[in-house]
Length: 124
Image (cartoon, rainbow, N blue to C red; front, side, top):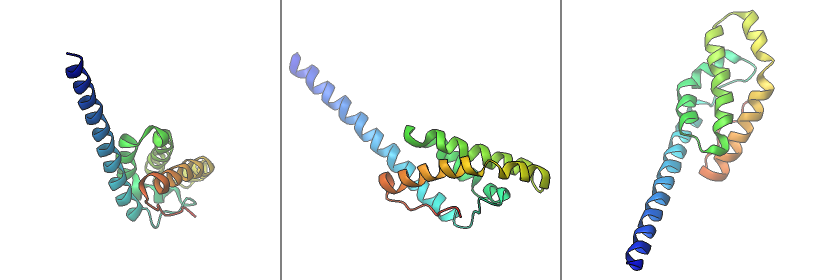
């Protein structure tokens, strides 16, 4: 009986580990796609963030806990930029938030390189 319980516990633990790897791998694959689309995003032009909004939403939802909040910052900013459209006054207000977005994006970039071996483009 003890042997059966131990075997069952080992199988359950192994399955949980495989699932976690699969989720992390899926995130990394999605991150690589995002990196390809984010090449020409300029943080000084908040309207550029709409170019990566859908990819960023997907990554926010699937991100590991280490960067989930950072993706929330990036997505929130991109949504505000999309809503602002070409409204110069609103875009000027948004430009004051780029520091926070850059900090979040740096954390995402570091995690991407360390955990996924993906280089996301720098936002300059």
